[in-house]
Length: 381
Image (cartoon, rainbow, N blue to C red; front, top):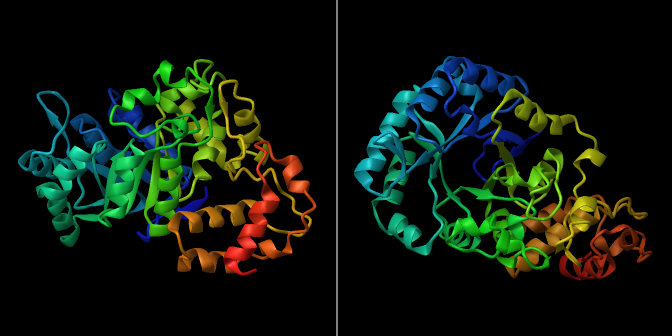
């Protein structure tokens, strides 16, 4: 298992995390088995968006005596009422829900307190200008949550939340189909057939800008819906062609700021498929050829950081240089972090031979030589 730093939190998280969907309507024995297998493979982060008391109780029992081995990303504003899940901004319900969460999980703190499901400006205003965000800050000051996060599907709203400086972690839906869709308060549009009826070209600029902003601000991203609820793994994929688990995971992990993919495994078999990414070959992880062949979608001229441009005769890591160049463009200046990361590269853009080998291998027709020339000007070497 490989581990990454989660933004500026100081938390080191496994590239493969675990969602909680698979624990719903399952007993304690299954919870112990699934979570135990994940932890044995090195998984050290789990997302708990569901307030289902049985799920929380079973997970609490499963991690008893091992709490220090697992990072809990659990959600504020997600409560259980009248026997069902409810998203709430009522502060009395939020507070009661948090206390119940700690009690059922049998813990005194949550590592990432994720303010649940903010997809509209109206809800963000209600949370940020009302008592919910103040309560989250109070919990952090008390050490009852270690870091404040939010979950969202809307890149426009998510960007505002990151720009506010109020959050440290963003849980966001990342996959090569959703990334083509413009931000909208109606998340149903992300998987609606009509959203993919035409020929779509290139990533939505708001999503690209969001990932780059998170990278530059040190806001770590944990990924939900990497498989589109399983739709991307079947012939019913909105792209018109199925992807593999490894391709979906690798796509998410190559986006800026992404630290961990929360795998929503509903069985040991599904968990093993996600864990298989750890030992998968570069060929099995490669998503570029599949994306380039999608019948309804194209990424013409857009660098996907897939690495097909390698090897460079001059030794330049073209994908890393391009990603850093994009981050500088997004920032509109020269952030210290990007400058230092560029300086640490073994080879720099000025060493480009303009031989065109990279461009001949790129599945997306990226003008790599022009990017290297621009990077040399921007970074001064």
